[in-house]
Image (tube, rainbow, N blue to C red; front, side, top):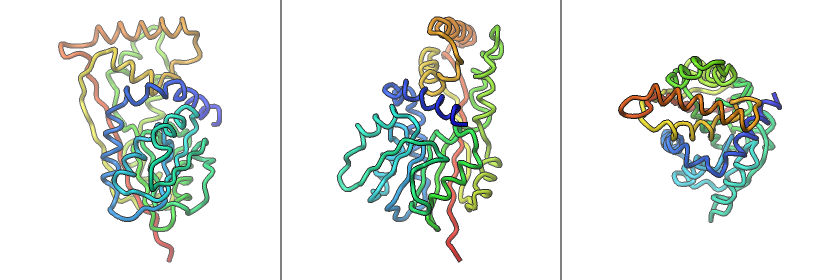
Length: 268
């Protein structure tokens, strides 16, 4: 499990400086997630898989917490977060490197836990939900955004028809994507009360180059253990197949986001 976490962390460290330019739709999704959180006072906030800090920024803009802790296994992402949000007047920001199951935080010490576009990377999703629930105070809220089931099918079709297929990258979609019943089960098993769960499906038209830039930023580590020359040759095959499959409006694909908001019951 630690090897899988380190692989993901290293991949995001390599893409940290270019990450936000490639994933603007994720930033917008995080903003919608934060706007769906129930109104209230959240003095202590934990951002799990905080990345470069866009979800924390949305939380600060809406709730202005007194203290915010960001946890991420990627050193490169934390550096980007620190440069952008490390010193915000009136908000005490703490950053820590670590995975979701070994977060260096105290139990029941946060009013709000957010996790945006990171949950799908956690190899043990029940355990991840339990770890985040454990960090919540009774009455606290958790808000999650992750990849939803059924997205990226056009890209999967391209990968499946290459010779040879990249089974690591293909299999990752099944391992990462989730739907509402699965997420609800994770929350319930963690002792949380689901408040709102929904999916958002969007059809997008873009260039092949822009799509592959996004894939390199978020999933480049899934290409496999290859040399730079092998990676370049493989991505050339992928791009050629995508060019062939593109229509008059460019590369067309669906992306599904899964949102979840839940509360930790009050004691007694």
